[in-house]
Length: 136
Image 1 (cartoon, rainbow, N blue to C red):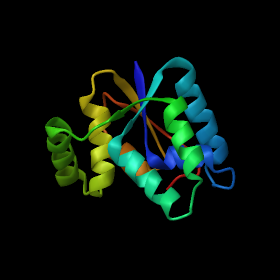
Image 2: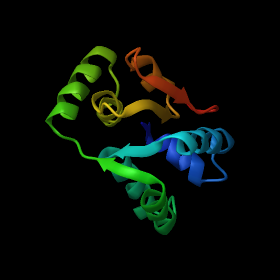
Image 3: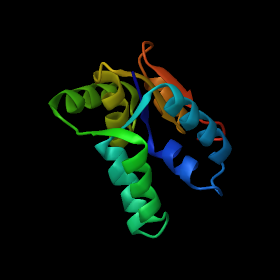
């Protein structure tokens, strides 16, 4: 089984000064202890953008993905179609809809860890969503 990670959860995990750090460490740690971790290519792009803008240490970000994330899931046709449906039904921003769609179309993904309660509200009932405390 696998747990998908949203950018907010990863950033909170990596950044000790982030308001969700303690909760993100707990949730990501719990997920990693029992399942493999996956992330959408969109999540990787969001976090790398922050690193390239100087908000995060690029080596730490790459180390996290290299050491802890079992797979970066590409946006394929199934993910794109699911994201379009989610966005039209929930008004999520497209990056958030793509991340949620990645978690919903991958049969091995049983949960999503995020810092965004809007994603949790838009998730289908069969997907467990864990919102890190202190998230938006």
